[in-house]
Length: 92
Length: 434
Image 1 (cartoon, helix red, strand yellow):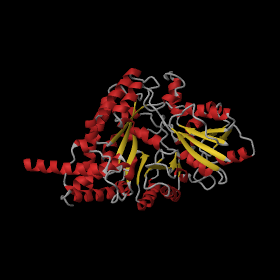
Image 2 (tube, chains in turn purple, red):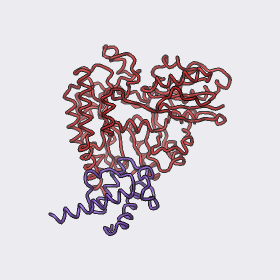
Image 3 (cartoon, rainbow over the protein chains, first blue to last red):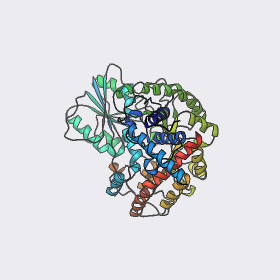
Image 4 (cartoon, rainbow over the protein chains, first blue to last red):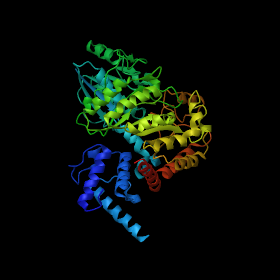
């Protein structure tokens, strides 16, 4: 999967959410209620986050181990985790 | 004829300190909220048993407003959890005062029928199968008998079975749908107040009927999470294999309650994981076998306790999370049990944990025994049957020690760092299976 622009990240996130929840979120608005639209329970949410970590080679910080309210927030969390993961790798 | 079917759907913890904990530790009430947010499958089944020429409306009341105007019906059927039964009685009394006949049914009414009769024109005990169609016929002829006994056997057979009216939920915001595949449980644990109390033997729904119900539910809600409303789904592994093979192609995500033997066979667990099962709720009850002596007549749970950790690991390593349920305040429990449970949860890696206090629901062998032993704090405490409020004197600790220990354990298990630790561990398991 890509690690490029935010737009590309958004596409990756949509793809993983659709795959794990079984609901097509390709047309979901960035600010729509993600949990309501996907019917995502807490266990499925962790599946989504685990698959994102695996595909994008990142590690969410502890405070982001829940599905945020919107797709926009999730993309932001992914971008943040990518930056943090990269930073911790380069500082070692 | 317009029949109103009303489900009392809200249960609230009565002990103030525990209610406050629910605000600061939302996970502690999570499971209870899920149950309360499910549609009443019992009343949807009643609707399915109603002759098609009668109009049926399904309603849910989470909190009764005694001043609210009553919706007009020709006949009212009310079902309620024990904890909300007094509100159900208030509602029933109001309808009857306005001349509308009321029928009460459900588990509590079946277990305490004499009490319920004082608030109803008729009661239905047992399941609605075999009772409700007769009741509607009688109502049309202008005469309701005081009591209708539902069938206790062959409830899923051709003579009695009716598919629940999932169509009555159309347009409502349910993320979870519920389907029943069995009724009863051969373990017959002393405390259990579930459907085993209204059946004479374990009843298993044929796989094709269960799958047809899931498909019917899928027609009215968009890709819901399914919850099987069973006491113990996988008693019969042969049926289980057939069911798992049939549910897999539906591509749904689902949850059920079962016992630890679900993990006995690796091939079965693989099938379970592939079928879309995301979580099984298992009544572990206590971390050590010593406390499980006498819980069920055959001593089954006592014999199984030493395999808990292995079973949890086998399920969760395949992505099927375990919601482990513990009952605090069993007769063998001393104040040391709270730390024992906390340590077991840490060792096990359980993603979700349900902590409850032993609750002597009316009509159960536990209630009868504690009453006999003079250990009930009061004879009638139905609004405190919340699974969190203490209603009896524990054997090896005081009421205060049990309440204090519970609050301590809730805080230990549901504090943010513990939740984070369990989430991280589960995500690592998921990643290992990708």
